Image (cartoon, rainbow, N blue to C red; front, side, top):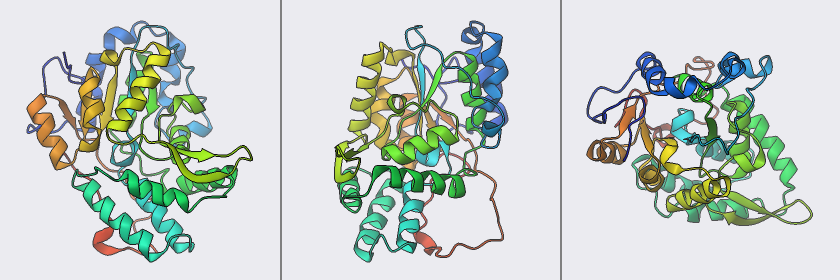
Length: 318
């Protein structure tokens, strides 16, 4: 039976979405029983979760064991943990650096537009084309570049409502795991930046193939998009003996509906219109995690791209 996050009854998606403050109160109630089993150390260190500045001074909490019978909280990245699309910002970054040409930009515009409307089927083809651009690139070089990019461009883009939810899961002894269609490098950067599980095997993402010399081949070794995300996540859980019925999944996109249908606690966060309608039909929880405060509201980007800067829902579902 599907259980809506932070409530004992299904939450109608057409009702007013939960505010960040209401989200904290609801999460306290929903997660309180499990939280009683967590020791004081986990509680004391939970404040490190989700806080970008905190992570440098407060050690990350020790992770619970996967064989303790608890579920896992899976978090989509783009438009869920953060209020923007990291891939689109990276594409603009690479355009500015001369890495991406007009043809790839046009392809990206098309697929980002479809994704924003909840029609992302087939986007893996665009990902495969993009991967070819990095054939022969040392993986370590790309990793460093992506880490620096996330620190500069995305550290301040976390949705404020996500932090208290992650804190409650940690206090309940449940791991917080990034589950994204992005490649392993941005996924790993996000996991470290927002204090999710950061071990290589504990970040769920698409994977670019790497040869024995440590260079990217330009091919995709694993697709974690659409139905593929569900398949990859199910396999990840099976290897660890985790029951999906005890797990949570937070996402904004209809493209993730397959995995949403399989977890016990599906949650639509600032969802696109198609997911909002589906959540209403299924009686799933719908949450508004808000948007991040601008890092420098007076600074103009080098290229704004006008209407091409596709954004998901900012102040609520829809």
